[in-house]
Length: 310
Image 1 (cartoon, rainbow, N blue to C red):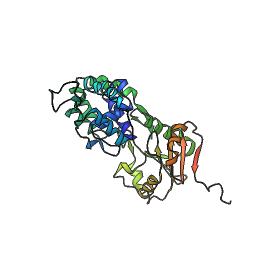
Image 2: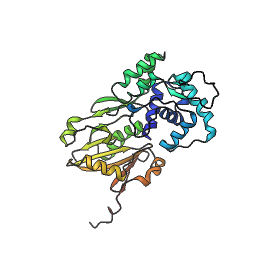
Image 3: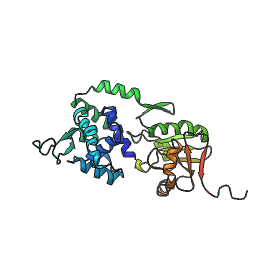
């Protein structure tokens, strides 16, 4: 899910140890913040929560079940590091006299961490995390330098853009470079979102020219390409764990782009066949599928296309 990837990105930017940059730690952070997959980061809350309740939250909100004997793993291999090494979690803030081995031990994010994380995805995020890192006594300049060296890079319209690390953004780069080269080489990029910065690239002028006033990025697909030579608008979802063009999504996108005169091409892009197979039941008819590991081909979800008489 998208929120898990975003939580992982936050942990990476907080310089969490490599062994804590995993799904378990991302889900634990989301539970500490009471943040479901559809919630916005600004709605994060400081929650006093036991490990047992963290596991219940993860199962209920993210459909991931951990066995009861996983409590010790979460405590020793996630929460301890969040507390001692990352510095964003505190233990028993409601009762500092509570014994260490008490079954009622609570965990919560620190006030400083909460305020910084609530800015994730906004223009204030960079300044907020820099301020937090200084408070945590970490070397912000060295951290920033390392982060810049490992960011993904993409050129759009002659300008270089930097994307945060992750499979989702790697796939987006494949779409803009490889998919575009094979199927719509003359197309312009009108929109591309980043895991950390929702509107990394947005051509407001061109969007307005085709009849779209962008006011809410959540409605937009991951990538929008305009091929004026073919009179086509490509609406592309990059699928690494969430969000192919389902029936519900197809209706949303058709409504949002209803004023556009170009033919709309709906594409679900996957990194490989394995990921495609995980989502095949959710794909809507009258849409297309592109798989990065076999880039020269597309799958057309249009059963009668080749049965019609010439």
